[in-house]
Image 1 (cartoon, rainbow, N blue to C red):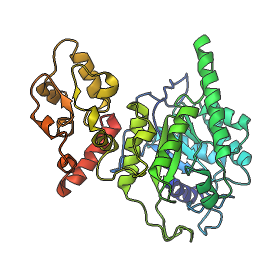
Image 2 (image 1 turned 90 degrees about the horizontal axis):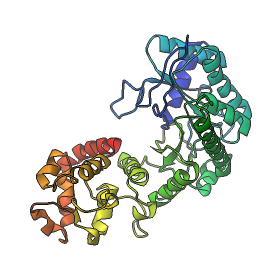
Image 3 (image 1 turned 30 degrees about the vertical axis):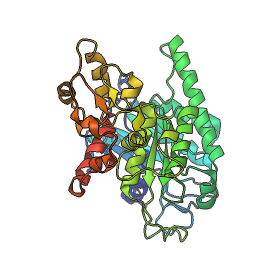
Image 4 (image 1 turned 60 degrees about the horizontal axis):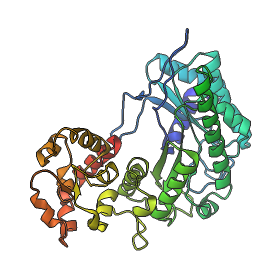
Length: 420
């Protein structure tokens, strides 16, 4: 099989991995080196759904010893298979970079023979790029759960970001759909990365020349909709991962059964993309807004509301905590006001040191007053406060049918910039 055929097969096979970050690391070029990364990000081109396409995103191989029911590359699936040699991945990366097609590489793989065998070849690729070719571009490398600690630690020395996919939120889900995998293996890999990153950061505080370890951190991916597991349980798992392993991000991927789906999943309809979107919004609230995962859902409604964003849903359930005075309220409470994002709150805290803030001031700060006006007090009169206790406030805040698509676009942009 020639290289073009391999690239076509393994490039297409990588499209289901959503855990593809491309920023967060700064790596300056050395003398005679090739490429660089910037902490602000390296992406220049995006697809219409927001995904970056400036990374060479491929699998090392789609041959896999596992038979995960949700994976198109599972052992029992009858699809064309291919496998690169380490030198082929290195040459592809360098040639694409020299042609200005990419500024980095995202490298994942099926598990061939065993975890150590596959991890050793992935590590060989990134080691060769860094040490033998002086490549300073961005590298995101998938860690194979179950691989030895030595290989995971070596991979982190060369990659900017590493990630071990948890795939499903509970052990019972894995037992049903991926019986060859277990959460313990993923947890050990994440724990190794976390501990080694902490050691490297502590060492660099003492010696500036100490080697970095996965400077852009680690992430993971979780499949949504393959089982009946609720958003409440998914968010609980994500929250635990953030606390215990200091993850940079959890990616949520709505399952998309294809013509090659396993019989166990062939009857499952793909969940609405709005559910995936709401999980990302809720995840943002966990990381940047001080919310606890238990606040975002209830026992009666364990799944996120598809009609409104999770912060607005929380505010409607806790009207007794409103209105919030933007001139006196602490930062923690301002962040819980629908329509006030992190940057908005920073502007409010800075501005109110010099003058009392009015609704007109908030409008100039680009606060989303269509939502916020029902929940805030300012230095001038706010006639919309009289609606806070009305039974139909929920209806007043619900977008009209023709506005829903626009609102989805707006809230996606807000989540991407921290403004919810």
